[in-house]
Length: 162
Image 1 (cartoon, rainbow, N blue to C red):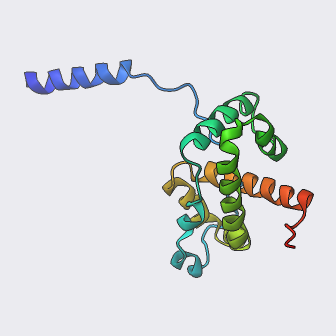
Image 2 (image 1 turned 120 degrees about the horizontal axis):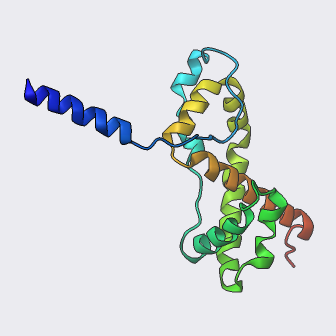
């Protein structure tokens, strides 16, 4: 009897002193408007669309440093991401060019399928976002860098071969 009482008192005390965050705010995103996805959605591995190319090494460090300044006031516009090339250390620019090219190729190959799946499989898409930690942020960053690369291609035009 004493052991049970002691256990209940200890449990009550630990619950009473536990700190609970005042509020948890999740990133805004559209909520699914249908209760069940079509059966075809279940056969699709949606997490593959969140497994994006990621920068590494010095480029990752430079992008993280740059991003910490961008995200102070809130979400960064794509144009602010594209300005990385003017703020970045010159020694990371070749790695950035290679990474942006990868992001562009990756997104070009998957953008229409991703848009279709987000629209037609909203419940499974939402579940996939929970299965890949940081996947939504990495996807958004990849889309932004792909856009920067596309913008740079448009501005400079195709390379000429003589």
